[in-house]
Image 1 (cartoon, one colour):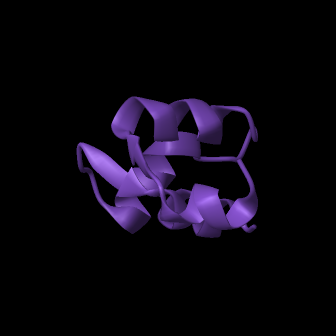
Image 2 (tube, one colour):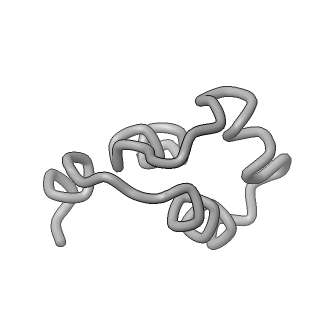
Image 3 (cartoon, one colour):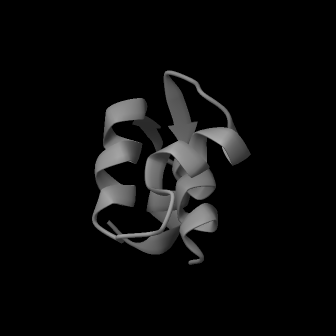
Length: 53
């Protein structure tokens, strides 16, 4: 999957948690939830943008 495809896809809360955990960011998934919101699904672009891609 390329970057554009990743941005357009939907990911579950658990998939987002797993991807964020790979990046060892201070505050991790809890910080993501505070900043993006606690939902069942996210757009790939939301996760990638939050990770700084």
